[in-house]
Structure formats: C-alpha cells, structure tokens
Image 1: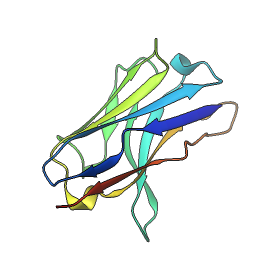
Image 2: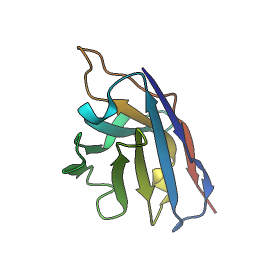
Image 3: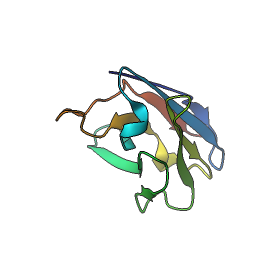
Length: 116
C-alpha cells in the first residue's frame, strides 16, 4: 500500500489549495479515506472523511464550509479542496486509509503553510 500526498505549499490567508493523495497497492474503491493534519507541537487530528463511493462525507467543525473532500475512484485519488485558508490551518496534511485487513495506512504528508 502506498499513499502519496501532493499540492501543499505556502499560501496567503484567504487563499486556496487543493491537496491530492494518490493511492496504490490496494482496491481503492473499496475503502473509506480520510485526511488528517498535524500542527507543530500538536496531536494529529481528523480533518475530513469520505466513504468508498464518495456518497457521504464528514468534516471537523474547524473546517466545515471551507474544505471539501472528494475522490476519483478511476484515478485512485482522494482530494482536499481548501478555501478561505487561515493561519491556524498551517500543518502537515496526511491521507489515511480505513483499516485494510486490520491495518491503517498513512502517507508521508504534505506541508501547508498559511502566512502573509
């Protein structure tokens, strides 16, 4: 199983970024996927989750109305569209699989920095 995040970078407050997570090594369309983030000195926290079909999504209160999780099962990719970014959104963002035969898999993360 491999998860590779991309799309992070430096953006000004109020700006937007779209993160991608390319998955391989498993049947992507059979598993829910999630995005997490970890700010410096803080625990890793759940940002958003999408079901295997993309029919249902859920979000942390801190990002509701600003972030949108989506997936393309034909491309084995999950996305996180982030709008109206705030400095407190600065973190390393990780994608994660649901449990596959009891194991959850993580990507290596992509840095998002929101600063003027």
